[in-house]
Image (cartoon, rainbow, N blue to C red; front, side, top):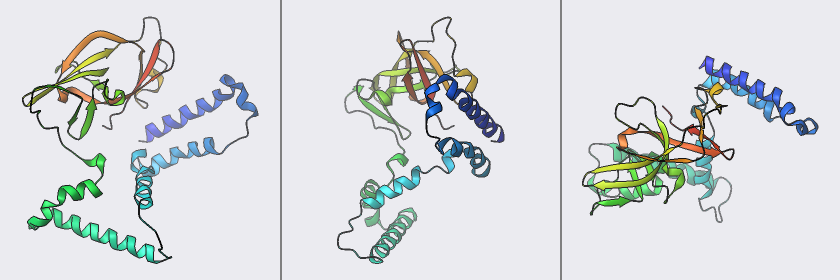
Length: 252
């Protein structure tokens, strides 16, 4: 962690130094505190660990839940009591659902309870077999949703191992999702490699920023792989006519 934090601070310093060189118009901009605060992320990494452990998205999600609560005709103090009682009731119900002697009537309502109060991102499971073999528009594997490109382009972009013996993942897009009985397979179209003679500007940041430059075009070749050969989703941004950067979104 100390090495990554130090590298982050070094790269941020290089970026600040080059900002006015590559973008001269920024010399006349009013100075903002954002860059100063960004340097303090170095301290937070050393104090609290990876950013995912202390970023504010969970708090924003909680705020979203609070905003949905009906506050009509509620006076100060009363609302706080309602929130506290609601939290305690939900916690008690969750406790019952986890007990081995949970009453059957409560178990019957678990699916409804999870749908109403559970975190959608925490749902873990795999899509059941189709009634009739054929194409799928989407497929859930171990709690992660995948889609063919024609259905949802973002959910179709992944890093995957083209064979069971491959050790290096490649970028691609899901063209088809095929189910036959209990088995489901993906047909991927390759992201074309970077054209010969072009350098990858993101190599200097690897592995601290797991991005790689590819061609912005797709190859004609395809791979048929199993769900277990998928490493993770990836993000893609076309930053020139011929080049696109692909960012590994794996948390491992």
